[in-house]
Length: 84
Image (cartoon, rainbow, N blue to C red; front, side, top):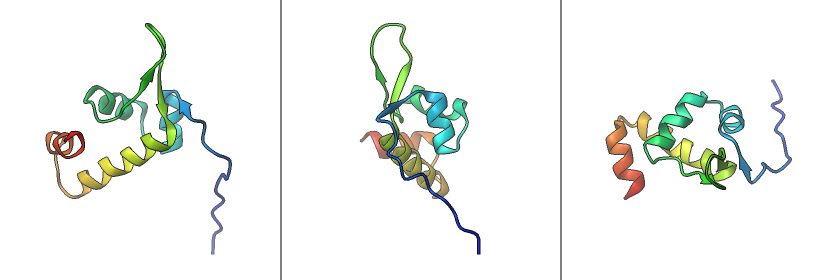
């Protein structure tokens, strides 16, 4: 039986898109698309500054999106489901 080691250190509160992509195991372009569609909330400290994501909340949202896609919903239906 293989033992899976989990990092027990807390995730940083806010991370950049590339760091989030690595943490979540998805492509950076996927995160960009979801952000542009309004499905993945981000924080922007000021004009011209990089977007920052709450790592735990973003990963939870990505899991929701994945589950909705697995149930057969398209992007517009997912938007309606998640944004009210």
